[in-house]
Length: 312
Image 1 (cartoon, helix red, strand yellow):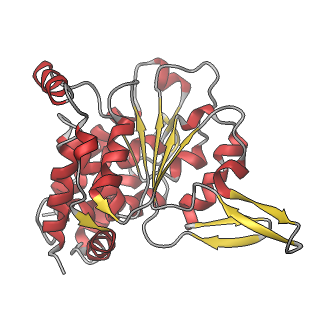
Image 2: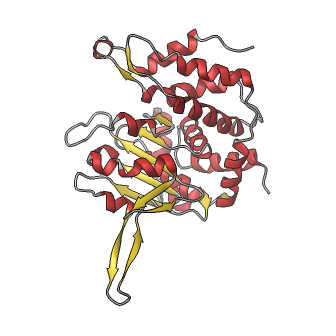
């Protein structure tokens, strides 16, 4: 069996060969996948969100990748599946929806109605889907990459707090430098790098990587540090809705996975600090006065990181 850190490095290198100029974000997203969580990419059109999802799927041999383009008329059954009556057998046959996959790209998730958005809640939170009263398990690798546009709000339905809390992380790719953008143009002059990307790890290796992440050493002092960071969001006057214990759990798991990608077998305070903003900020709801005053959830979390004592 391949060493977990070696498999992580190969996967990261393959994805970065397609998604150029975003090495740090690629590592964060892969760490989120290995931790068993899901990620929300909020960014401008054309920054590579869909390409990132496709590159991850192609880099892993044996995975099933499905994409759902969220629209206002999308129904829950379009995601979960539906039972269809077969007149030959006089029985209902279940036709699985795109949620039954290894990697699911939920493109422009905020364009669908809240009813349809909520169809993903059970799947993301409990790795199962209930259709017609029957529960169907989502086995193995189940990773949701959802995207949304942060500036276009016409015809959209903002994700409710419960839905946001199901995402382990929220991050952005952003624009690349001029040099990287020029390199992207050169790389796509003849063929898209995605078309020539070969799988570098197997599905079994990724599942083994996920299992190894659970055993990365996480000291009791660091557990207390995570609890203190998340707990610092509670009781603050500028925060209307604070982070829950689910945020603490996600921060621990994502930090363990990130340690593997950084070649270590233990979590350090620096790794926790690196991941804290992406894990905590999107779960916070600020008071209107704080928002109008120019405060952002990410800035508040960065301030809390600076104020919370680091274990030594």
